[in-house]
Length: 223
Image 1 (cartoon, rainbow, N blue to C red):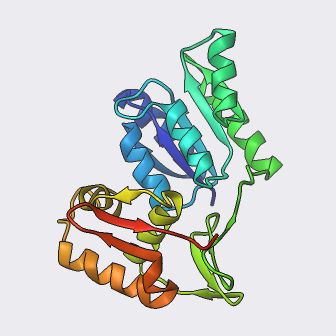
Image 2: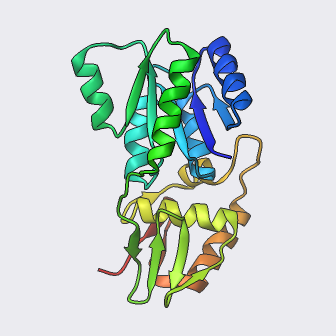
């Protein structure tokens, strides 16, 4: 069963599209704002993305562009009322594969979804980031590889390492890390964060994650 992420802030349209695609045999995760979609992309892998552009929080264009940079490779369709050539150009430059203009027939959407899924192509990006001579991080599959072997990480440790790799050399505040590690319904914990940091240091080396007093943490890979 193909898994689709739907970002659409119009509640009626969101519900209609979700029900239609589920009836067609797809698993649909639906969200209403860009930041929520960003979290979902961070948590799971999808076979296809259906993204409205003008949504609360992060707009669809920025979301897809950032997602591509982070290694999200699933094909994407923009659902949009925009129709100028410049708008379409921006959409394709951000990494989309197709678009459907509002209002649209559900059958048209089905055809476009099926067409992209049948092609089975993905946006390949840089996959292996070197941390050390024998340690790499696979951005595509979000896993740590040491001496060619996959190393199991807890969910929070995996999220944290992905954030560090993506923001290498930047000082990340505790608050910024909390936002990426804990979901909306979870209570951030500095004690837990220190434990995750300690666990990662044991695996990739203490010198890779430096504590910056009263600021946060900075990750450095070997050059």
